[in-house]
Image (cartoon, rainbow, N blue to C red):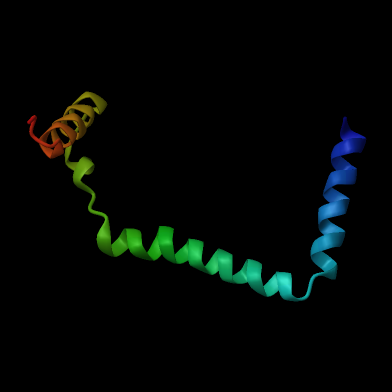
Length: 74
């Protein structure tokens, strides 16, 4: 099994080495992921759950918020 994994690794390593445009495209993808997960989290996603002490309290809060957002029955 180790030989197969080594061949797969070498296949991808050699492929990435020979790419020219692909390297720039992967760089753009990684920058976008960094922006989405690091930068946006700092500014837009609140740490609401950090005020609760236990997992049970956090779960209850999430459940209440989800139920509150449900549309009313017709």
